Amino acid sequence: MRAIRLLVAISLVFGSVGFAGFAHAQNAAQSLDELLKAVREQGTEFAADNKRREQEFLAKRNEQKAILDRTKAALRAEQARSTQLKKQFDENERVLEEISETLRIRVGDMGELFGVVRQLAGDTKGTIESSLTSAQLRERSSVANRLAEAKELPSIADLRDLQAILLEEMIESGKVVKFTTEVEDASGLKTTQDVVRIGVFTAINAGGFLTYDSTDTSLRELPRAPADRYVNLAQDFFGADSGSVAMAIDPSRGALLSLVIQSPSLVEQINQGGAVGYAIILIGICGLAIALYRLIALHLIGGKIRRQLKASEARTDNPLGRVLAVYVAGKGGTVESLELKLDEAIMRETPKLETMQGTIKVLAAIAPLMGLLGTVVGMIRTFQTITLFGTGDPKLMAGGISQALVTTVEGLIVAIPLVFLHSVISANSRGLIEILEEQSAGIIARHSERGG
Picture 1: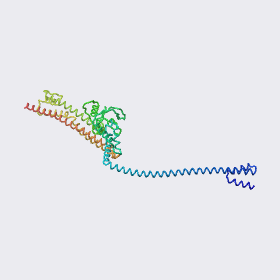
Picture 2: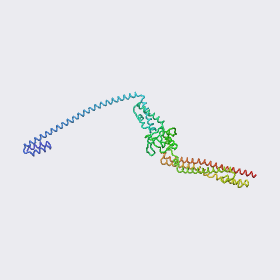
Picture 3: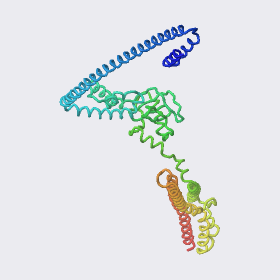
Picture 4: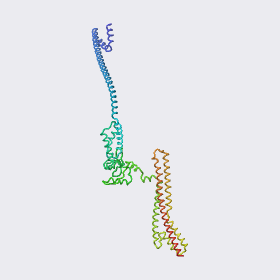
């Protein structure tokens, strides 16, 4: 029993796996000898397994040591390489500094030339991009752009290219060229059209003037055409094949043309006057119609009076004939009575000759007053706008100021002609009345002589 207990204690030292095998052997054994044999065999197996594990551990340890040795060797190599590269970098910095100083000394005045070339290239780039010739000759600013951004001295070939661009621009500015390109209309639709370029100043097509957009080197039709006389000149010039043809150009290269199309037309200026402006125009039309009517009437009456002066008999179709008819009817009376009758007849004719003159005079006086009214209304609008929105945007105040100025102009435009026409009509009517008075005085004098 002691031997059995001793074997059991030894088997516990080998672990659970050995204990399980030992228990299995114990159960299977039929005698102590067999049990001993099983224990010895199990011990041999345990020893062989431990030996194998020890050998695997030693192999892995040696492998990890080799990897560590290789890593340390690579680290030492990289450290040595880093030290060498740092030395090489410091040497390169020293050499680069020496080369830069040598370059600075050798360049000398070439540095100033480099600055001049860059500045000239930048100016040339801006000139080319804003030039009307770029609408025909595209992609010309690449050389100037490259030289303007260059970091090194330009070559002789670069300088020649820059010279060629400047000479080309100079030559093209004096040419009148017809070419085909895309033109964008007011709605944004692009179509291929024939275009005539007049130097660097103006471009036209069959419809009139074009404007140049330097952002995308494109030609666009004007949103509104200038005056008809300029459009007619452009159309005649576009259709001409040879010879000398009059043409209007924009020496400011589009600035004046853009201002012309932005200026309001006559109808727009009239609309700026508002209701007061319309009333002034109505007054002007009425006054002008009355004045023209009176001028025509006085002209016809004057013709009849002149014919009456040449006639031997009194005609009742004119004032002088009616005055003479009064004399014929009362020539048998005294001088005093005849004089009174002739004065009465002249007084009857005078209002007919001076009719509507007061109306013209009143309209001529009302027109500038209406213009003053429009000025006040416009200024009230302006101050109301300033109160609401401030003075930051002048366009908000443009409506009131325009009404103030336009109505003033309209009032003066109406008043000045009406005053002039009133003076002309008054002079004509006074002339006719003086004829009547002169003839009346002559009649009385002759009648007095005959009576004496």
